[in-house]
Amino acid sequence: MLPNETTSRALQAAAALEQQCFANGWTSKQISDSVEYGHAQLLLSDDSGRIFGPYPDSITRPSDMISGYLLYSAQPGTPVVREVLRIGVAPEHRHRGHARALLEALFSLCDSHARVWLELSEANEAALGLYTRAGFQIVSRRPRYYGQSDALLMERLASGHEA
Ligand SMILES: CC(C)(COP(=O)(O)OP(=O)(O)OC[C@H]1O[C@@H](n2cnc3c(N)ncnc32)[C@H](O)[C@@H]1OP(=O)(O)O)[C@@H](O)C(=O)NCCC(=O)NCCS
Image 1 (tube, helix red, strand yellow):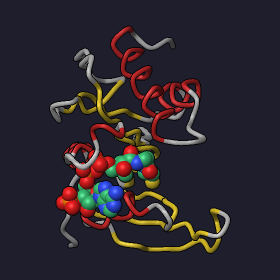
Image 2 (cartoon, helix red, strand yellow; image 1 turned 135 degrees about the vertical axis):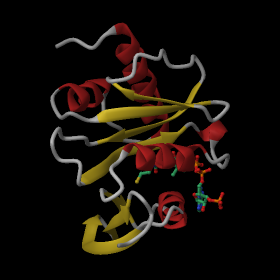
Image 3 (cartoon, protein in one colour; image 1 turned 90 degrees about the horizontal axis):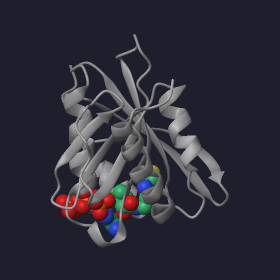
Image 4 (tube, helix red, strand yellow; image 1 turned 60 degrees about the vertical axis):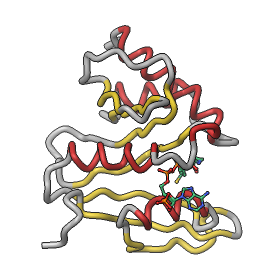
């Protein structure tokens, strides 16, 4: 099924940011395929920190001044685990809390008992700082998964409180 115009705009904004944020970023096709076939959902932030989405469910047209994006897995019928697939903020909008706001928006969309997990390179200091500050904990490590650097698997209960 082809995305509607609102979702197309959101996907284009995310794809453009992905290229700014990563040397070997996902292509726009990979991003749209993850939404269309992988049931991923997309959140956006704008230059004033307002959150839009999640797409494709939301019918609210995204701002023309998108600053950041968060793509997460959202398999139907499995509300227990959400995975952060991609997150990025345009260089000129960093250090203003936009990534943290995107994560908070994801937590607020989850069931309280849901777990959010993600993987990152331990060499990515900004991402490690972001996730640690947001309450994620390291649950596993894949040695030298990224060349010389380990991959870290991190997890947090969406509600922020362990039972
Ligand atoms: C990682 C990234 C998304 C952070 O975005 P951001 O909007 O600047 O982050 P925020 O302003 O919301 O920062 C939240 C917390 O993250 C941490 N943080 C952010 N940038 C950091 C940096 N460069 N070094 C260390 N910690 C950092 C801080 O603890 C900060 O909390 P504080 O301001 O209370 O100290 C951004 O740097 C980015 O897009 N990087 C390139 C893409 C990427 O690596 N994505 C993650 C892949 S796993």
